[in-house]
Length: 320
Image (cartoon, rainbow, N blue to C red; front, side, top):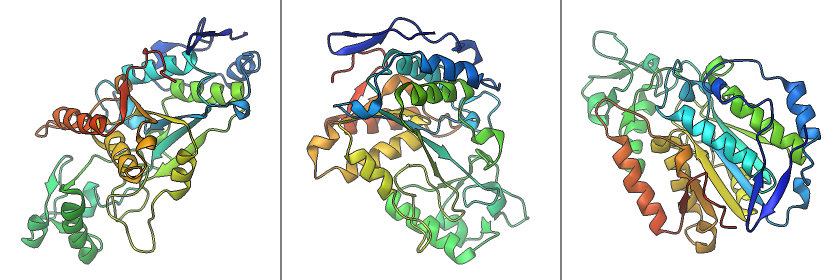
């Protein structure tokens, strides 16, 4: 099918979504019809991304099965609707998006934030969402099964650097597992855009170093000497863009900390902060039994906005 694209003022619109797009499949597992997607992309008639005078990067943070499907091990309520709005944003604005980067949180069974890393005095592993403090470790209430010296230093550094305590999460986004994949309908949109515009999407993996957490796509919570480093290649690419659009899961963690790191990185370049646009209706916070992450996220986003970051809805006309 051909994909009619027209310019309306400053906004680019499309007359309809591709025939292969089925919003009812969002949040389910299926095999995308790759041949149909490729055929539609070939007939879309979109200009090549290499010719874009204004370079716009869409940054999709961790929109993976375990976070976005109701049967996922760390499902974020609202994620399915976030994905629908994001997919439809892509189909409305394909000629305005130069490149797409998708981060993939990617974990092993034994990581410092997984239950298997810790036991109590009875040898029992902590339940998901347990909070472990440095004081807990010093008192022996929680004992690391692996790397005891580093584990104590880690919870101390985490408190000092990030002003937070360690949260134990359910096992999630396992490398090689179904939960690690992008939602298939979203993947289809990313694949279609790549072929239709001749741009190579980037799949940016993070989080596979067992000794640290890695919410932000820029750098981990605590650097592990000789093992982890900041995402300099990604930062270099982002600095070269005229605008950066951000969506993903969860608003309270990986999205928030990604934006926080970008604000920190670009603090001495106010013009860069004005190039950041968060699609606020394409991200939702984690629901925790004790912690009001929604309120925390709202407060922090307001601080980012004061510093120059833009927050828009996916249906708003793009202001560039």
